[in-house]
Amino acid sequence: MTDLRVNTPPKPLYIDLHIHSTASDGSLSPREIIKAAEKVPLRAMAITDHDTIDGSAEALQHSKSTDVEILSGIEISADFESGAMHLLGYLFRLDDVRLGQVLEVVQKSRAERNLQIIQRLQDLGIDIDYDEVSEASGGGQVGRPHIAGVLVQRGVVQSIDEAFVTFLRKGGPAYVERYRLSPAEAIKTIRGAGGVAVLGHPSTLNTKTEAELDKIIAGLKGVGLQGVETYYPSHGPVRTALYERLARHHGLLVTGGSDFHGAAKSWVHIGFGSGDLRIPYRLVEDLKQTAGSGPDPVPHA
Ligand SMILES: [Zn+2]
Ligand SMILES: [Zn+2]
Image 1 (cartoon, rainbow, N blue to C red):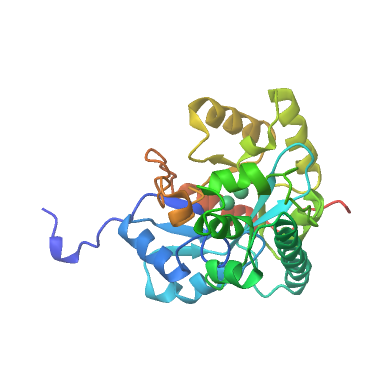
Image 2: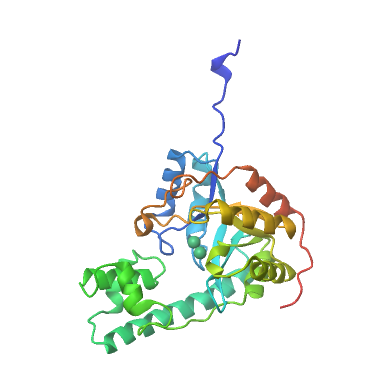
C-alpha cells in the first residue's frame, strides 16, 4: 500500500509556450500570467511578447516562487511579403548584448510608426493623441491594438475589428509600414543568444499549397530554423497534422502555445487555447536538448 504522506503530487502534464503580457499587447502582467498558469495548472510556460523580452524577464524573476517552470521567450515579427511571419525564440540568454541591440532598433521603429499612424488619423480629422494611446497600453509597448482601443473609446468605430478594417489594416488609410528584421536576421539573433528559433503559427504565412509552405520552411531551415509551432488554437486537426508532417520531414522540433492575450482575445485561455489545446511537457525537453546541442553552423545572412 502506498504511504500517502510521502507522496508528492503528480506534476502537471501540460505547457503553454506562447503567451503575451502587458509588456506587449496582452492584458495581464507577467505575475498575473504566472498565477493563471498555476491555476490551470501548467508545468511550464513562456511569455513571448512581440519584439521585447521585458515580460519574459519579469516572469523569470518570479521563477523561484512558483512551481511553473518558466522559459525565456520572445516573438519577433520578420519581414515577409504575403502574410505575417512570426519567429519565436526560447531558452535564450536575456542579457545577450546583440539581442538587446537588435530589439532596441526594432522598438524605436515601432515607436516612430505609432506616431506616424496617429498623425495620419489626425490628418483624417480624428481627434486622438499619443498620450491616450500610451495610457491605453498600460505602460507596456504601444501598438495598433491600443490605437484601435482608443478609437473604440472615442466612438469613432464600434469595435477593434472595425478600427483595423477601416483604418489600421495593411494598406488602410492610417497604415504605416515599419522596419522588420529579415527572417534570417531574426533567427540569427535568437540563436546568437543561445536560444532556439521556431516558426510561429505557419497559418498566417497565407500559403496556398503544401509545396509552397514546404519551400518556405526549407528556406528558413537553411538559415538556422529549428522548430515549427504546430499546436495552436486556430490550426485544427488537418493543419496540425500538416505542420507535424513538415516539421518531421525537415528534422525540426514542434512546439505549441495558446497565443494568450487576455481581454483582447477573451476566447483564448492560457494552456487550453479555445478549449481543446493540450501541449505535452516533453516538447520542453526537446527544446532544451536542441538548445544544449551547441551552435549549428548558421550561414551568414
Ligand atoms: Zn504571432
Ligand atoms: Zn503571439
